[in-house]
Image (cartoon, rainbow, N blue to C red; front, side):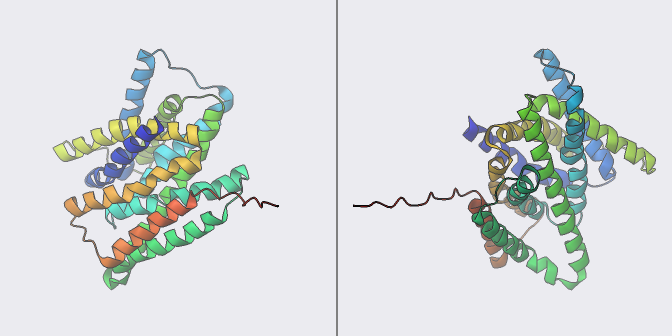
Length: 297
């Protein structure tokens, strides 16, 4: 079952990055995310009600659910969409794959779990890989500032996502189902983003074009209802560090999709960078070999 969930998450989330890119246009970013998670929340509430599993969250867990909503269904996607304004969606997915490292680091800071040496080594490989991936854009003098800004947005979104992982793990430890906490968290995220959009004076518009609507439906149902439920189920079963291992495969899917739809060109440095990022992520989750038992005669 865990293998099926891994494959499902990789396939869905590996292709959502281009759909995020297609959300950019006439609709302000906060409203696009509002539409996505409002629709996803409605679908989840209907499904939970139909299965007679809809419950009001316990009062003592409302704070954690609200924080999860802000991290997973609000701020992180504001960051990812802003990143997609200046860098290819496939590169945003590569930055996102470093969530394996951030999950481990946050688990150390918040849960006081030991950081194994391979996590440090994997993090160094991942950072070197990101530098190689972005080197052609960084050396393009006209786009230096925009590329670095996009990288910063993507890293911020990844950090928010990793924080949401730990919050979901804590909620599941209290016996709450991911589908339930997701429904309430998505609804809260949509309300917060809508409030921000209205307060900032953003035009309340909708893009009826087939590409925008298709991207919205794909992001809301497979990308949010199915993808987040499957992924956070893995978080509950395996822990946030090991669950994030599936993000290692996202860049392969996302960069190939980006090559088709965004004219992204592979280069030797890009391929080497992707390899380092993936090796770093794999190294992060290598189990330490037990100390060899000495035999005495």
